[in-house]
Length: 135
Image (cartoon, rainbow, N blue to C red; front, side):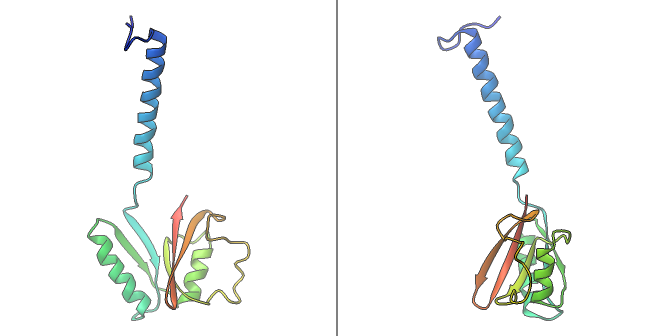
């Protein structure tokens, strides 16, 4: 039989214990569910390009933290953007040169979660980096 805990009756004590237990279970689930991936796929560029060179540098940096970077070569920014916009193409990150979206129909696509992937745009200088976060 439950005794009084902190001056509370058995029903309140049991309710508090169940509530705290559910919060802890949810927190543990959320912690493991939101863990960073151990493998990232990047669409880079042609062999010898600055995009491919930078992808290899990212691969070395990520490897130090136990993350494997799979580099997919491409023809360049336009192909990278097409891969990033296409929800059926499995890619997490890609290099895209600024202004390459001109003429490409991306009206029905939003980098902020309208597609099956949440994708963010980071720009430095003349090129940008699209980063896709799975839902």
